[in-house]
Length: 134
Image (tube, rainbow, N blue to C red; front, side, top):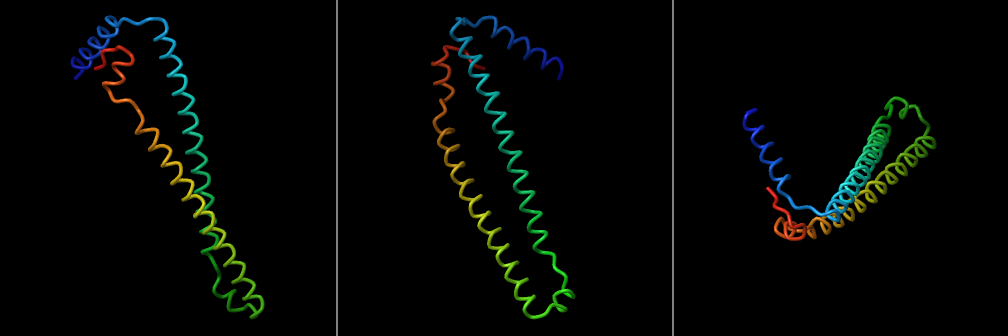
């Protein structure tokens, strides 16, 4: 396994040594890598925000699902009606949040699919960069 990995590394080093690269290609590569780092940072931030959002939704669901049956039995009719109305409004609000989240996810998925489908093929990338790719 180590011998195979060393052979692959040596082959990759030889390929790099044989590349004819001009300064403008290096600048393009550095800018592309910088863009990748920025995009990865944005993706991480987006997923962190999504995690926070869904954890808040889970906590809201948990809070709405807990009720004390004995307390409900002890309530007077008027207070019980107010309690049910408040719960109903909160569930409707939660439903709206989930509907909005679903709409945004579908929109983002369409944007990502559009971008991913416009990426160059391996052959196009090779011809654009004049590189011999593994």
